[in-house]
Image (cartoon, rainbow, N blue to C red; front, side, top):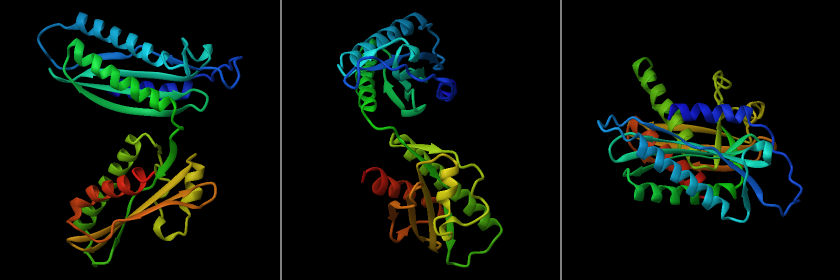
Length: 287
């Protein structure tokens, strides 16, 4: 789905602002739906191009019909014609029975993603495509009515080691496990649809954020984030650890959410699993 990801990034930069419609606040919201792309990487010997083109066309027709049936929305050709939201996507067949669908909904005025999800569905016949469209249309309609995702700067998780562990190879492996923790937390938060992950780059590499009394807030604000998240892994022993995170509002500095795992059992490789569970339970599900 690399091509689709590039399209998403480009559209966020270059989608023009929507034109105001004369209907006032009660007017139906304009929605533009681009034809989805289709890629077959299954390497099956039979040429199924015609069947895929027909099923994709039927999928797009049904998607436009289902969204247009909701009286809150009206289908328009493009942002220039009054679209407040733009829907794009692509479908990829990866094997005989497995296909992936990447769907995004863009808030045109804010140039923000309000939905960016990857779905998988089984089968490659008319019935399986119809089931997939029914599910996707419900997800899109829900996203259109949802608030824009929070721009969240997730800083690299830090290690607080009380075991006096030796440097060298141990430090190298610690860095690798911490990187996995950070990447996994960013992924699960981004996939939730509640958050748009802001790239922090090298903005906070020079200091320990867990001890700087909220200095990450100013960094996150410069990056254009709405909220900041810092996290720490506290190693108690080689088989015991705790996890914690803290989320702040970057405009006020107020703590929005925090979580602590309590004492957990597991070696270094289990940090990632514990961190994903913690943010899922305390940050995503709790909201």
